[in-house]
Length: 153
Length: 126
Image (cartoon, rainbow over the protein chains, first blue to last red):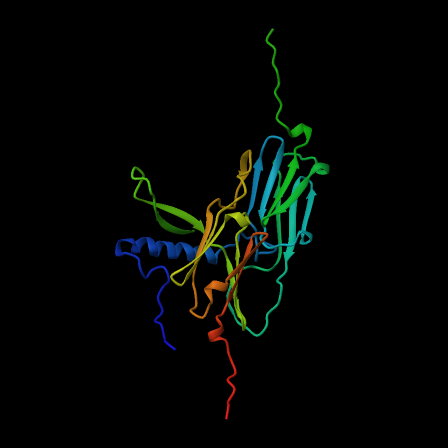
């Protein structure tokens, strides 16, 4: 049996001129982990990252939801506002062991986004792959960009 | 954001380049047989994962496999950077028996302890 003196895993072999960037990385990492939330008020614990893209025909909403079950994700569209809610359940198989690190959030979340233009609610589709939810919302005919020919007489 | 200096091969390029990574949130728990590590990497498929054990360190690298969505960006909170995180491995872990599973953006690693450190009854003979 031996006792090994504790060393910072990444800092130990770094040449001295790199020290500053190591310190910076460590600080960045600290900030990165301690404030992962973008508080949305009601459920402040977990606020999954949300992106919206516009490809002229559709609005495409991406949500990072790792480790969910498809049936635990709810989608609703009301007055041009898309709401995604759900709950991530922890699979408890704790025997008699300890937990070393607990950074993942389990529980409920809710995100809403108001779409910039009218969408056709009947044609909305969604897919869930690699922990990312993709909602495709086709724009209504009035909202699509149109070319207007102006004739000069 | 976690960042690491990587050396570029091309002599014309800058000698070092700062590459930014996202640090995936992780859970680690221990039981009698070993450790279970879970890391969240949404957007990374099985093919984008690179898990390396080197010098007593476990290096997780997750490259985003999904293509950048078409069209213009209206609103963004996520980051396009790849994921990277390094863990120091306990010497009791049998590195030859580590197994990995990727499911909906969550990587689950099973790190079994080697048989020599597991509790064992020693029978006393006459």
